[in-house]
Length: 636
Image 1 (tube, rainbow, N blue to C red):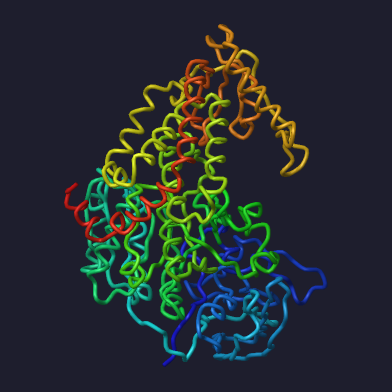
Image 2: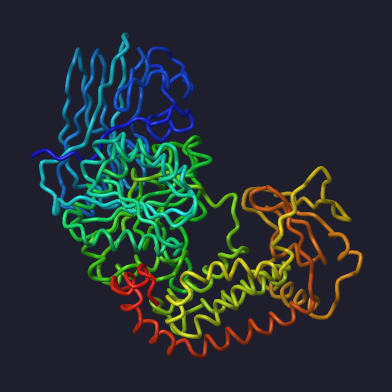
């Protein structure tokens, strides 16, 4: 029996920005001596359907792109598939060229074939040289007449290790428009629904998805496949835990495919992730890459890891992100050809085998932040890997226009990172986590950001109280954190209503001499700057005129921790550009909070071994399906 591993597809939207992810936007003349660039908009007119396109006479089109190249190294490393067949259907005179790359992105031609008329061409390919990395792809060159590309797929005759379907779990809080769009795309994708058992939409908001005017139509099209579940807002962890819990009772579901609400999907990616999960030699978490929904050619997240020393997450090549495919395509980006192993994958889109859930449990009752990373680390400790899979991706609202480290989410950033460290860090007393956490406090205090420090200290106190607090405050921690903002004037976003906010000395702009060149202090200068700033903020009261009106103004990109401390007050543009925050130095708050920070971190370091034992002993109960069911039923 032939099994389709990957279909060649074109974008759902007629969006020129998307084209570089599917087909090379640079097609070159093979008749003229000089190459000719054809615009993405012109190429859009040659796309006939989701799977077919015209190849204009004299042009060359490459499918060595993000969504259409075959990630051979991942299939070789994580599955038993060793032979794949590429099938290409064309009409008209053309030349098909098949290429491969190695882990360094070096291109090598595997085969060339000339075709005429209506023809189906097959290429038998062996996966035995891709341990370090590499893709396989094909180009089509039209001769003197326009040819028609009618579709292609990558297949195998090998049967999968497991053949169950996936239940999709979508968690939403007041994002009904995004959810309707996702449901509509799923309803329009029968090839995806073939691998889907159930769609669980966990609605935790008061703007209900099933109240939208488009809902009745899409619900009728999906039929019994769709199930809406409403519950109080238990955060991402509570929503995804509910989807996992419901999937456990579905005998036809071998997987649960988690999806965030504020996303746009590529349906083929869902099908690919399920197929890859079926073929993985051991139960494997299959994670999707994340593109920016508002800047769609840019890849923002892939191959993420947790550094054990500071116990902090990051992308494996953080300095290389975001990657802009409108500037450099897959074949021009050697780094993307390397096989990269991940520690975890964000739950914007992540396929989890049900067998793993049965063994290690559901997410921590973390509300948001670190629930995905902690779950994958727990799975890793049990012997189950996470694969960050190329060609499996969606578009998600990125963090470019956000700064959730200074809003109510600061509580969850701090608490859940420490809890994850207590559960999984192998370093004595958490390694450098505590020192790093203390430094974060100092930076916020020097920047006159007292609200996130208050939340971070609340988080530390809750951690020190023991693991029981996590389920006890699951539904209340977020409202309490948001209520605390009323006590901190810097949290107010001042929007201009005809009269611009101004500072006494105007806006300060800092010139960047070159990319990644900043004026931040390092080495001994960093230590002296930190010490002198802390002493200055402890001793000196702000000048009265700087309390009446902000002293200076900063753009968000210039408002760094080594610049704001030099002033008594500052206007700082909000991350999304909708207004300005006013930061004002408060000597009383500074003194009290810096002492609290020292005391709390000292206590955390002293009690770390005992706390680690308590949290690890409580982990099974915190994550058990039975405990989560009691939470869903409103029991304490």
